[in-house]
Length: 484
Image (cartoon, rainbow, N blue to C red; front, side, top):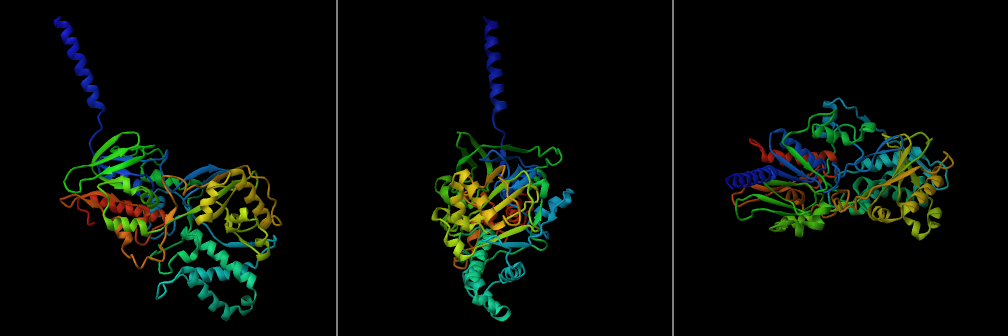
């Protein structure tokens, strides 16, 4: 009997030991989202010895950066380039790790809708002028209206004959509209403010990771590049959708993060790095207590744009010289396009991805980008090939594509868009991005829920480096001796 009692006690002790070993360890910080901002924040904190749990709703790391094997190499379904080389955390990470990144020349070769080559010298001159005219006007003004006004003055002085060619002028302005929209992720260039606060970094604006892929940036951040050991105090959980974040507004307790699968994690604080599109859709139910009114207003007022890609692969691809190929419609050709195919007229052109020699990337944005995400794949592939043959078929042999990839940044429930831009309300709400970045504090004034992501950077929004800088900013807010 006594022996049986000891067996029972030993079994209970063993079960207790098993239960204790499976209990989650105490976390200093929980990072929600593993895009550029979240991965930077998690890595900075873990490299400083902080115990970090990173929760990512998708089955991969990268957020709106997505490198995919395709064609004879890799393509970027999301962010394509490093925008600037001076004071860039992204560029520096490549250089410091001996990863080659190369400038991509965006020389524009334009083709007309009858298959002929356009006047490339004139178009590139006007394109350069329009992009150079993007300066801050004295009063608030839609960007398209501002550029058009500047262009008309330029043409009167330099090319008065062009003003007589209404068809060319109308279609060139539409090409510029689409070109700007693909930069801004806007639906129309007049939705964008000419008084944007965006500021370029110095250096070349289109540096490519080419066959390394943008994913290499995340390998470097996580200390796994070239089989690195990673960060021992960082635990990453994928496919872990967060549904609620409970924070101590009127007390000094911990932050509790609830996941869709029922798991609950607790930490001293949390850094939320989900996209603004996700915040717009979910903030009401995501935070308990609710967010302050000024942060809700900022979430509402800062616009989340859509920039999408359609990428085709071919067995062989013999393109004309150039990197970017623009599509300049003739008015009569555009009027013959069927209503259901109107979206094809909003693809401004295609480009060679530097990571794959047998792929072509087609660019669209705004409402048409949202539409293309929902169309049947075979329809998109067929219509895009027809478009390519219409504009460039006289200059190259267009074979049937061997594959297609479409981005789905808007329909993806964990992004709900591509990146933000400054709309016409930017001057009415000048502190909106700063308000987005402001942490939620407990009753003692300590930051409990912090916010990072490209939308929270006042001057480098819409970029990977802006997102990374914001993750660094919030990590440093939590580290000793931080001046933030």
